[in-house]
Image 1 (cartoon, one colour):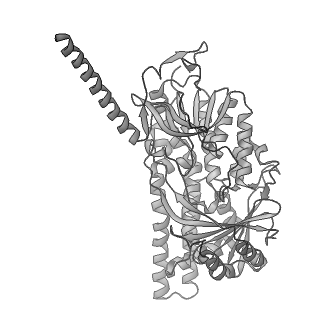
Image 2 (cartoon, rainbow, N blue to C red; image 1 turned 180 degrees about the horizontal axis):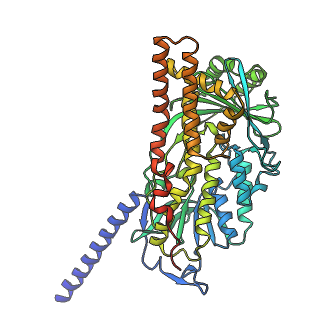
Image 3 (cartoon, one colour; image 1 turned 90 degrees about the vertical axis):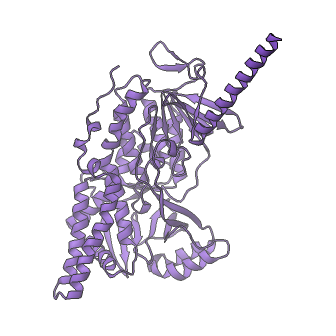
Length: 523
């Protein structure tokens, strides 16, 4: 009889432990991080001191996502001899209406990473600047490329073709493994990310382990909540069209039309196609299915495009291949997490008006590569995490400048019933039309060729002062003085909140941040 009680007690205890363990797993999976069995994360060291699992399937780095950031990162780390496992949800060619314009600053980073040939053989077009249109007037803003090699310029292309070229380049390295699968969660042990759990194309659920997991799964990331504090803003939506055999007023230039209610963009994406992006404020757009969108584009927007583009624009609307894409903005607010890092649009997004997203991503990869290069062993998660905190400060010169400019220009270029905002918009157009140092300084910031934060703030407020001068000359009046006062306070209200979200200290005084001086962990 005692034996029966003993066996019953053992059975009840076992069942209780199983139930408790299941509850803990469920709670952790709710946060996007799942635990893993002790034997599953057990490590054995290879002869060269690198980290490998008992079954030999581990990599040095897992990269989640093979978009622009993920593919470029995989190739860069693979060239250094690291074993990289890339897991991408869909390896077929992407078909997107954004990520099609690479600024000259981004192209220079592409050269630095050895990926410049990825813009070849995809019918990419060189871009030498912008043309700005407002109320029948226009001005051309050229990139300051005089001191660079003749091949340096912006590039515009089909996003999918560019990404496929980058994937091919990464996969050509023997130590880079590119696999199609959907990462469902991060695997954590004692506060350190050890790898990922993912579902393969054929439905199998597998795990992969590495000392460092870098999440680059894009703007729709389902993993970022585990690694940062996402504050995603959706200020507007893009409506995308492709204009065929359209001749832009300025060849090899992006075109920005300061329309009402917000800007319209045109730029070539091949030798025969021009991308049009119509910005619509808010998260709700007219319905495409019932014809509201077609009517909106024809009656509200068509008459605001330059006459040279009008017929092609209407023909593209009539053709009906209209697509929409929400525009997202999200400041970088990471949780430093041992064993994991966020990059690309999963980490930081800005308004896409200036086409700076790929430039920021490629610049971030250059910074991270330089930090990781002296490290042979990535297994010390906590110390590696502490060291990589310097990444968030070192990336600021380029990232914060492009992010701030994108947010500020979008607000200035958008129409407003407020008279002070109207004056600011007109002042910006007139200031850029002056040419010389006035336009060159601004376009060098936008292009990523001059990522200087103080230069950005100076030009922004010089535009505001120029606008006040227009109001007060030749005869100031109380009304004009009042509008001028509101213009300068409005300008402050535009740029200072963006700077605050970027981090004033990291943006302007990075040398005062302790992480700026972090040395690599001792081997």
